[in-house]
Amino acid sequence: MGIHILDAMSRGGFEEVIGVHDRKSGLRALIAIHDTSLGPSFGGIRRLSYLSERAALMDCLRLARAMTHKCVLAGIPGGGAKAVVLDEPGLDLEGAYRHMGRKVEEMGGRFYTGPDVGTDGQALDWLAAETSYVTRTGPEGPGDLGSATAAGAFAGMRAGLRHLDGESDWPARKVVIQGLGDVGAKLAQRLVEVGATVVGTDIDTDRGLSVARELGFEFVEPSTEVQIECDVFAPCALGGILHDVAIERLNARIVAGAANNVLAKSHHGDILHRRGILYLPDFVLNAGALIRGAFFHLENRIETLEGIESRIENAADEILRRSKADHVPPVRVATAIAEQRIAERRVDS
Image (tube, rainbow, N blue to C red; front, side, top):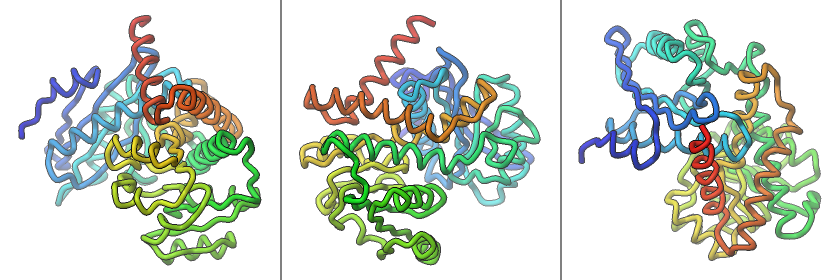
């Protein structure tokens, strides 16, 4: 199947897709700009070993559009973008990221980038050596991005519990966290602090056990977590984990986590809704790092965790109210709200 870039851009409302190649480093990359109608675009650089150029393009476009949805739902005066680097044998990482930094700098503030899968602190330092339009994770940046993302997931859980039961009542709640990396561990810490019963797992069992022992919660073997009876299942690792088999086994009342793209296919949100499981869309809940990065660059300030929670909880509340009133799955409501706001601001711009 061929790559029909212009067709894909037209269908998704994209402004620009840039192909980047550097002979010296071996870099092959794509940058997708989805929306700058209200301000600059924001999106990290993802470095993966893609099966094909088409797979890389589709991932880049999908992620960029989701970033616009995150921006409009979180009230950020900007839009979405994404860059993907094809991780191939012989790639000179420092040379590749420095070249990407120069490309971002050439764009003059139309695109702000930052961390993503495969782009760590070292990569961000290489980028920052070439451009000021990058969000770093150290003292030069907008603060702890992991805590910001965890705060959004926590706020979404609170909104979901209040929607179902009228209150959060943390000491009476059980939360299962899938993935105990930086974000999952910080979410677990917050939940332990408020008195919730926490169960966690991670494919890196040594890391997961260490976090569980440090914070004092139960660790379970990977692949068993989905079927544990709980109030909230919180995916904080890989995407695509809620597919037909997993949903059939899922024993939670609410799905609210920090991972990206947890639905294997869009219709799985409908299946969850039919099963009576409340799914809080991931692109609403995991916008904390984006919020911090955007306001750091746009307003030269670090958004507080309380401010992040308030923004995300307000967005979740609106989505859940409309979902209940219209009998429509929350993920469809969230997407409709985002698309409506994008259309309105494009008319006004």
